[in-house]
Amino acid sequence: NAGVTQTPKFRILKIGQSMTLQCAQDMNHNYMYWYRQDPGMGLKLIYYSVGAGITDKGEVPNGYNVSRSTTEDFPLRLELAAPSQTSVYFCASSPGTSQPQHFGDGTRLSIL
Amino acid sequence: AQTVTQSQPEMSVQEAETVTLSCTYDTSENNYYLFWYKQPPSRQMILVIRQEAYKQQNATENRFSVNFQKAAKSFSLKISDSQLGDTAMYFCAFDRVDSGYALNFGKGTSLLVTP
Image (cartoon, rainbow over all chains, first blue to last red; front, side):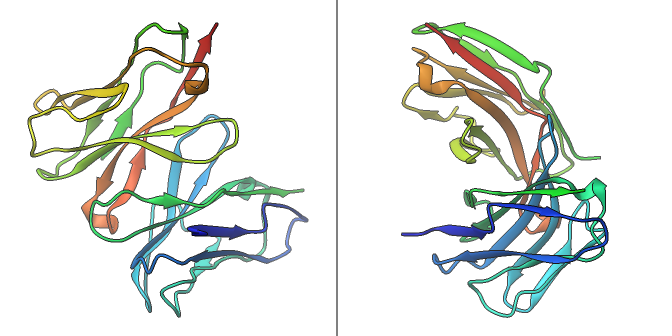
């Protein structure tokens, strides 16, 4: 099983550029999440989704957008990249309430 | 505010010894789940153990066990017979009902297991 797949694994962007971080899961999980992890910190929630067509903001949503058109995919869009968005981004999925989350391997993003 | 505090930024333990990582949290929820995740240098997030807040019995998973004190909002992780492969960052977290059961993480404890 592939589990949660994130692409790309690494990316360098220039200030002001845009990009989409891809996340796909093959476990038919309804719940999906995007977190960011800054150096020396725990993960912080950016956006989450409880099912196809339903998304909501987390703790640090500014500068990001998401969509959830299918159960499998939950892309994260960065518009007008800023240095403060340099971080490691994790996508996760869960089958239901309070169930353990399955994480992707992360995307390391640098904005220069 | 709902927060998680891990007061030990770094810890070290010798192989085969026992180590305890501390965690306190603050939540207004009555029913919730607590988690410990491990993040080795490979950067993967790996579930170590999970505790249901309404269960008094402490969770155990092989060499890993927790000491859950609900009234004190304390959730420590004990690692017995430490192995070199236990070297990693360890994150304590609880799930938030108001955010689709997303996880609220502490800043982590870096554990080094030495030979």
